[in-house]
Amino acid sequence: MKPVDREILRLAVPTLGALIAEPLFLIVDTALVGHLGASPLAGLGIASIILQTAVGLLVFLAYATTPAVARLLGAGDERGALRAGIDGMYLALAVGAVLLVAGLLGGSSAVAAFGAAPEVAAAATTYLLISVWGLPAMLLVLAGTGLMRGLQDARTPLVIVGVGFAANALLNAVFIYGFGWGVAGSALGTVVAQWGMAAWFIARIVRQSRGVSLRPRLAGVTAVAASGSWLLLRTVSLRVAMLATVVAGSLLGVTGLAALQVALAVFSLLAFVLDSLAIAGQAMVGHSLGVGERAHVRLVAGRLIRFGLLSGVALGVVLAALSPVLGFVFTDDAAVRSALVPVFLLLAVGGPVAGFVFVLDGVLIGAGDGRYLALTGILNLLVYLPLLWLGSGSLVTLWAAFALGYIGARALTLGLRVRGEAWLG
Image (cartoon, rainbow, N blue to C red; front, side):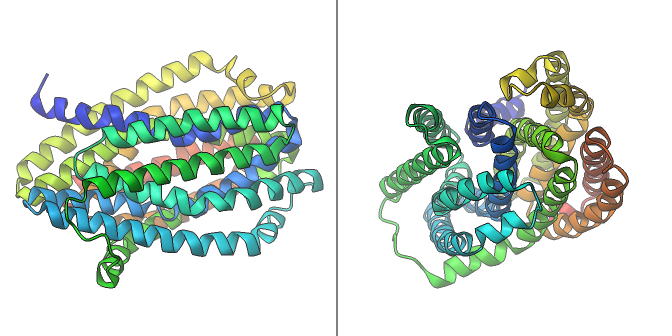
């Protein structure tokens, strides 16, 4: 095995464990709530997309922090690297507090905007108004994860998030079925687990600070926000695409929306599996550019593309094989299970393209090419929305527009970028 491959796997394998814990939170919630009935499951779908949008828009707290810290580390400035990560955590806490207030004040209105049936809206509102209390914690976890990965430490996030996932699963089972709290119990269990993870990250970083000031610096926090502005815009385009997909799904009725929620949960899991390679790319590309090794950056990008394509094929084969029975994990509703089979097969077909997309996204983030990602993200969205409108008549055509049309557009714009030299800075 080549040294660069060993380095990719050293970062990607533990990153995979940490990354899949986040969609596994949603998978566990979906599976447990799904057995309460189609309406609670559909309500979870609406609440989840709102929460994922809030957190997803601020994923730059990790994605901007990782390459920034890695570059400083590569340049030999370890104290500066730690300081940049700490500033990111203060920004995360401040933004999380704002989101908490906004969620409490506007959560009910956000659910109502989806126009779902009354019983679905009631379940979504209950889940959302409890879950927003965990938003500051999740943003702290994002920032802390970005700092650790930038320091080339993928193991610490794995341990923390892995324990958090186990706690979430246990708490949800107890609260939903043991205490009979239903969808509210699912939300509360997740919030408790999120704050536990945040506290662990804070304690770990305080121990590692080694004399670096832990006080907030306005200039540093502002710099983190500015560096992530293009990534924020890039993420806005991604979240608008996801929101538009759920809005279109809500017009398909309770069964269609419930099936779409399961499909999105599985897609998130597959995406985070592939994103483990992307985040390894962020750390490795950022570190190599800090050292000034452009040729090594090219080598890393090429090997990551190969890994991404192969991983996409492997995941697609597994998903296609499981497609007839996978629905039983999530719901007792026969109509929902039947609707899921062709959607899972479409997911499987698009696996290699998704692997290509997620890997190159990470490579360009690591290179600091946020402006290109933001501008092409808007272009990709403009391509997708007409396709979504054309495919909104059924769940299968809707999902084809997303998994093949939208992801395909991203593959084209990312592939064209890495053919040149501009992204290397």
